Amino acid sequence: QVQLVESGGGLVQPGGSLRLSCATSGRFFSLNGMGWYRQIPGKERELVASISSGGSINYRDSVKGRVTISRDNAKNTVYLQMNSLKPADTAVYFCSQGRYVNGNYYPGYWGQGTQVTVSS
Image (cartoon, rainbow, N blue to C red; front, side):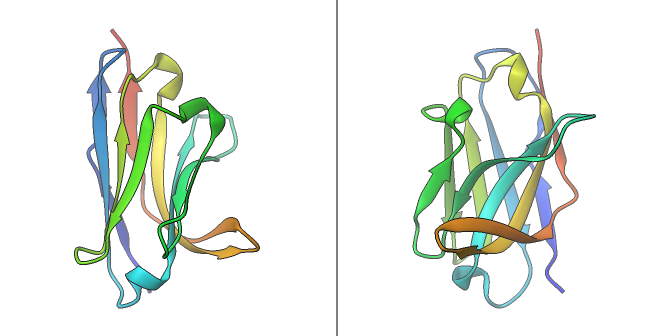
């Protein structure tokens, strides 16, 4: 069983930055794709960014240029650097581990989520 633990969420003012971290267990981190999702109450969970085992990256359009996903295979950790945050970025952010099929990311395991609130 893979465990994922997110950290780094919190309250930040509009225009501010946060860096989310997701530490994972398991022996095959480097072989798996990783993704960050977010969810607002009453709405579906949406993919924010994903990174393949080979380092290929995808972002949703609304965060392009403001968000950077990265991974450190030596630490079994994936990061999400978020800059120029907006109130619309307020959500619970979830880390996932999954795989790519035909270039699309599919999550398999989930973390418990971390709250990000952007407000003045």
